[in-house]
Image (cartoon, rainbow, N blue to C red; front, side, top):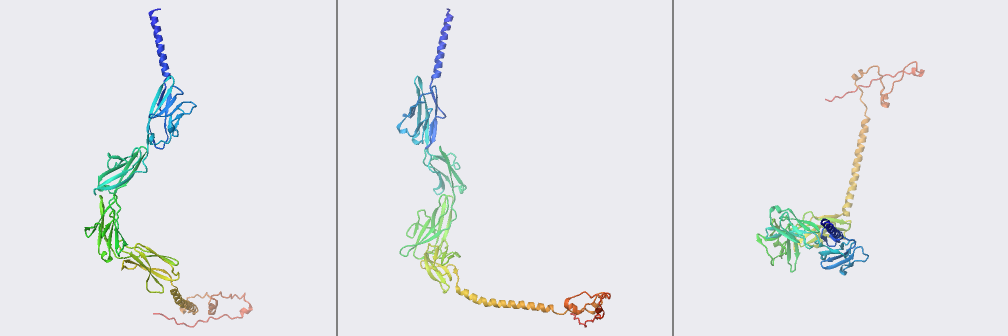
Length: 505
């Protein structure tokens, strides 16, 4: 054997051994890898599956770990149940291919998970997952506006809670500033912001939400006056000034240009929207003029309050009758000082009003019962401020009296009879005159008119015209006449007596 043949044989042996080693390693290597991303996110309360796939063998042993804590161990395709950690038995489920499912995950499930696959004679295969569990913030985001230094607007956006906290921005005001959970942004009170809707974008891994807020200058308002009696014959007059605004309008009070403050005479509410004035003489109070100003960084509104005496708004008394009862309702001017009302009634048998009830100053309605449905009544309301009485309201009439009805019937029946008699007499005179006119004789034609009549027309006697109108003349043919008719002489025409014709000049 030559040296070349020996070298060739040795080369073939080495190539064969290399090929066998390479093929054996490639076909028997155990591999495991995640299906999808190894970084998994989930909302609290959901079910999460850490899915895997493996190759190199058909029945490896699978072991899952949560950090260093053993979760479950099982041999794939084995009839033996998986060995699960006692604390996780109700929340862990192992799939047939070795994937791990976590049920109803909570925040403490956020961790790193590792799966190891082993098989005797093969190397160990390992892969890892990172699970992050999020919790949604409760409710929805809330937006509002506050005043800063009386000249700036502070926009607020809140959506607290959640893991992680929501990211908040006001892109219409500032595209670069943001915050988490509770975000505020202060801006100057520019006029273009009055009535402009500004949106807050609230972003969370589980959901995205928005809320909108609009800044508004104080709107026009109407002051409200209320009277509250106090001890020792003292009376408190409360004046309220509330204007719709965003941010909420602050209120200041003055009288004759001088600012009012808390004290023994004036008491203000915590938000200054109401002032209470202690008075013992209502007459002196009516001479005073108060002013309230509502303002925020976008503007202000001022109203003067001239207190009025006790009064009721014109034409506001309303009666709703229901058989034997009446319901009254009324209104008072906003600045009227009223401590009570007298309900007065006048019956059909009287000529004056009497007080039948009293209501407090806060009342705007009253009920009166035990009325007769056959009688007429008048009602009115008299406003009072302590001992001062105001002008009564308009009258309210209900019911109907029997006396006027009987009197009306007594006067109406004779008048109706007289009218019928007069009407009958007129009808009789009209009929009588019509008949008399139809019976008057007709005047004959004049002689000049008779000459114009041709001789071929027969003349009809007057007695025939009166009895039945015109008749056909008898046939005088002698061949057809009976002997009795021939012996009768023909009637002779007798002209009517001359008639004078009256001529009107």
